[in-house]
Image (cartoon, rainbow, N blue to C red):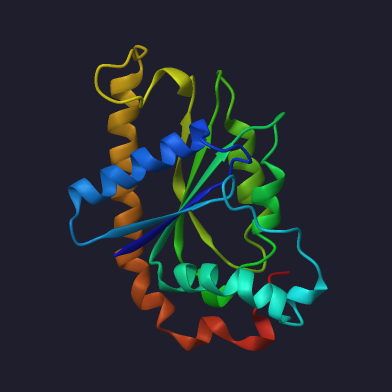
Length: 203
């Protein structure tokens, strides 16, 4: 199974990237038949969307084609988002203007929100509300909110807060749930009925 993690922080070497790398390691260590690709929007931001993307100009083809290939080949997606002032970062909002139903439609996705403090709930609500209308990505009911992220998932020998073990177990539970959804939904995507061009966008 192929997973893609979208790391939605605008910062390089962010806590969201730390979480993304931890999740990648967990998947690969528990399932040697799976592969994981991280799309780090902090290190490789996508330019702001414009109509040239619809026109498939050479500029946009060069940028989007490699990303499109990764998304299309993926069976499941993991969206990692920090909370910036109670919002999803601009690079992640911009990202969701690009994928089509053919790339991410009817594929299960796990939302992982990251907070340096006790926040983190707003990105979950925002992503569920506004990022899936036309691309028809399917967020599973479960999600993760990683709070006080600076003090957990730092590797062996590093200080961890009292909730560290809880997060380890909760992450494993959510990843197992995502894998189950991916296996169950794979036959769904083989049905062309869901990909009718007349109804490719949501209402």
